Image 1 (tube, one colour):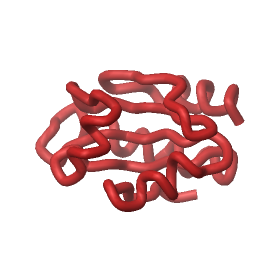
Image 2 (cartoon, helix red, strand yellow):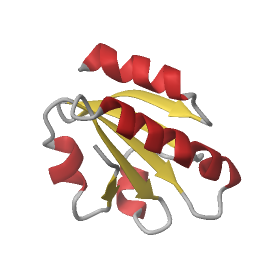
Image 3 (tube, helix red, strand yellow):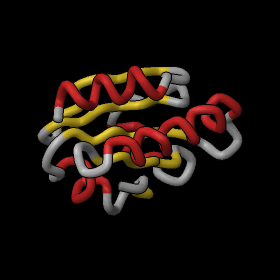
Image 4 (cartoon, one colour):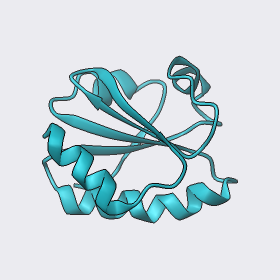
Length: 106
């Protein structure tokens, strides 16, 4: 499954109401570490297929959601399950660690 582009307007439908785990990558285009994390998140999305949903949310364009989840540093990755944030990771994460965390929730 490819990544879903998230926004203030579709966040509830795509993440909060989703069945199964959802990984959200909070990023900004100008952020160097975010540029390193981006391809890793894309690989995770391709590796997991339908086991989990993976989305990206630009914090500059979607401040409402970013503030709601207290995103202060980027990249921040949050895993949601059944509409609740269950794990927050700050900084660049490895593909293996993300897949492992999502598989435990699938």
